[in-house]
Image (cartoon, rainbow, N blue to C red; front, side):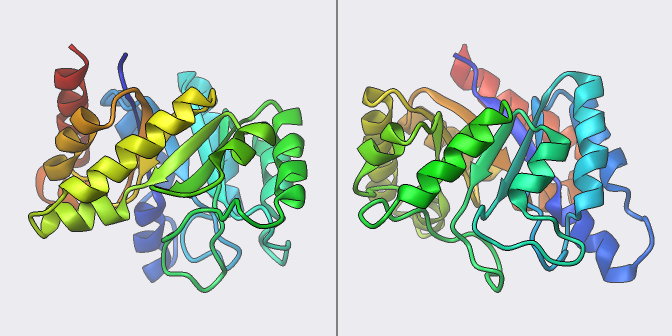
Length: 253
């Protein structure tokens, strides 16, 4: 099985928004990634429009349709709409992404840093999963390695989970990745036994991706943005995407 690489282009929008105007062009950057062989594009539009905007999402929906690849939209389904942000469900109604990844982050979070808690009331989350699936979206739920209650994620109709890999990346950087890697592997195996497929993302990089994929089998997709865009500043976007693909291909042979 080949793991798919979905490139998160949020950081391109961060750079653009820091100056105003249209440069760097998010759609052009995404097109470059797809021409280099990336299997899809990920975006995480937030209500405060700090990076990817609703307008970007619709433009990228057109691009990914042209390339016949996946658009993955991440977001908090509970965040209410406001000026410039119609809400995640309404945005997906317009963009019709192949996949939506539901994330329990608050407006003020710098980045997503925890998954859903399935031990509490999940009725409303289950209703939202059904709404997104009615749009034709595959639904993935952002989870922590070692989380409790994955059977409830499966029961509410989710198709996949996305493992939050921040702790693994931190462990790798500290020279002690094994505990976090083992937790990711155990959660992935539990999910797969429940009929859920597994995605992964957050702080994955060229340095730590190979060990992760070797240690956690049958990962369907990795979404990588911050590290990939950072590395591309030195090596170029097309070259960097191809280097990630080479890591994935080496482990899929």
